[in-house]
Image: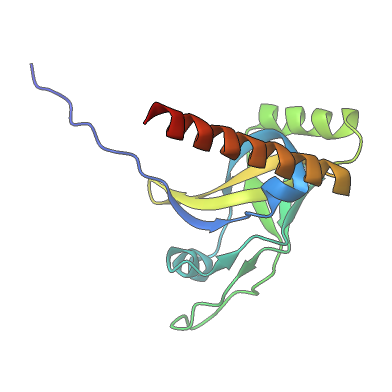
Length: 159
């Protein structure tokens, strides 16, 4: 019997929204495809995308991504608009679940958490999030610091 070759699946991050994990409580995460133009995919492969100010919105049963900046690809003859609205590609059942979650839970929104290449395709990890208040952020920082202190103490006690 011939053994199957196992290929390592490495996702290469193009853009990561690091502030999102601090500013928001992430309730759900989804992986979505994104409809792009040729010059956009070439620019993304060069790592010229910024998702920090992006957000998603459901309209007419489809999920749209707003305010994501993909820099123009200079060698292209015809370029794209950097902040155009882009459609996110999800299955119908996922869209229905997402719509139900947004309707049932107050103060929630959809934001992109990271953009990455997977098997040559651009994927966007989106999250249904709820904004944190200032005191929530302080509690998260205090818990993280306490965990680090505990890990340090455990590391030193083992030696």
